[in-house]
Image (cartoon, rainbow over all chains, first blue to last red; front, top):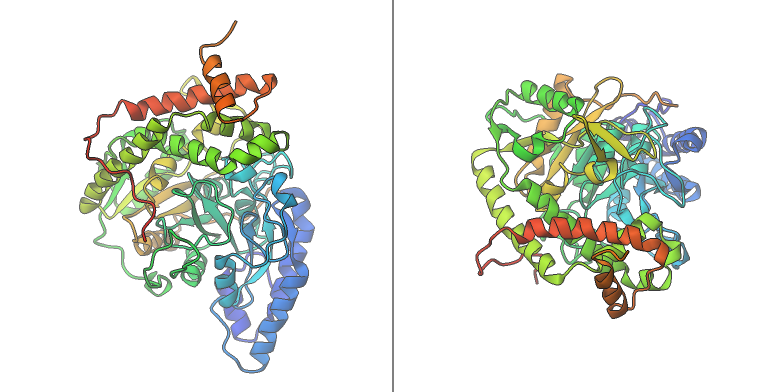
Length: 464
Length: 59
C-alpha cells in the first residue's frame, strides 16, 4: 500500500499494524509532502528527517520481530515549536529563544505520542511567544492557509493548522491560551481539541500564561483527534497544574449514541460580532443536533476582558527580563503589548482572577441543565494575510483584537472544547462544541456524530 | 502635547527598569489604554469581599 496524503492517522496505523505499509514508507511519504509543499505553506520551521526515519525503522523492526506496536504506529506528526524537541532550541516563535541551548529531552506529550508509535517529523511555525491570533510571524514569515495561501492560517498554532489542513501530516500538536488551537482549526478547516485545563501535561513546553495555557491535538478526523488525546492523557509530576486523574480513554466511546444529550446554542456575547458565515455554521450544527434552545452565558464579554487582563499581565511577567535586555529582538507588536501589560495595576489582575471564580460558578450552573454548548470558533473565515480591519455591519473593527472574542471566555475557565470544521464555500469555518470540565468524551462523541452525518469535515486542501 | 498616560508610563518605566524608546511610546500607550479599558470592565463588576481568586496551584 502506498501512503496517500488523505490517509488518516487511524488508516496509517492500521496499515502499518497489518504489515500493508511500513512505518518508514509512511514517514518518507510525509517528508516528501513537506519537501514538496512547505515552501508555499511555510508551516514547518524544523524538519527532523533523520530522527523520524530512525524512529520509523525501529517500529518496522518491532513489527518484524513480532513485538506489539502502539495505536499510532508509523503515524507522522509534528509539534508547534514551543514544545521541547531534544536537540533543538525551543524557539517559541521568537528570535530570542534561538540562542537557548538545545533541549535535552522531548516534551512529555511528544514522549507519549512516540510511546504510542507516532513518528515526530518536525516543529511548526507559530506566532511569537504565542501572543497571536493570525499565524503571522515576523521572524519566520507567516504560515499560510492551505485553502487559500493569501490568507491567514490563524494563530498562534498557525503552522499546526496549516500542516494538518494542508495534509502534510495527519496530526499536529498545538497550544491554546485564549484560542490558539481553535482559531487555526477554524481557519484551516480541521478538528482541534482544547482539553480541560490540567488534563494534558505541559511539561517541557515553553509557557505563555501559566494559568491559561493548554496543549492539545489538531487532526483531520475525530478518530485521529481521540487517538492522539488518549495517547497523551495521564498525570505528570513535571507539570504542577496537570491533573492526577487517571487516563479516561475516549476512542472506544466515540460511536456511543448522543441521543439524550442536552445541546444548546450559546447566546448573548456569542451571537454578537459575527459574520454571516459564522451564523450559518452554528445554525447547521444546531439543526443537525436538533438544538433550538439558546442559553445565555452570563457576563461572557466581561470574561473575555478578564482573560485579556490576565494574559497581558502574566505574559509581561514571563518576559520582563527579556523586555529589558533584548527589546529590539521582539516582534514590535508583541513587545509593545507586553510592555503595556507590565503596567496594568495589580488590583485589576486580582479582580480578574476573582471574577474568574465567579464566572466559573455561573457556567457550572449552566452545565446543570445542558451537556453541550455551541458557539462560533471565530467570527469570520480566514482574513487576508496582513489584513488590519474588517467591516462588520458597517463598523470597522480591528482583525487581531476580534479573532478570539468567542474562544477567550471559554478557555478562561478551562472548559474542554472540540472545534469542528464546517466546510462552507469558499472557506471553512469552525464551531466550538463546549462541555463541562473533564467531559472531553461528550465533546468528541458529538463531533464524531456530526462527522458521520457529513455536517462537519476537513476539506481537501486546494490552495496550492 | 503630552498624553494623559505618559506620566504614568514614564513612572512605571523607571520603577520597573523597563526602558521604552520614544518610537514605541504610542503603541505602548495604545495597548495600555486597551488593557485599562478592559480592566475597568472587570473592576466595575461588584463581587463579594469573600470571593476567592480562581484556583491555579494545588499541592
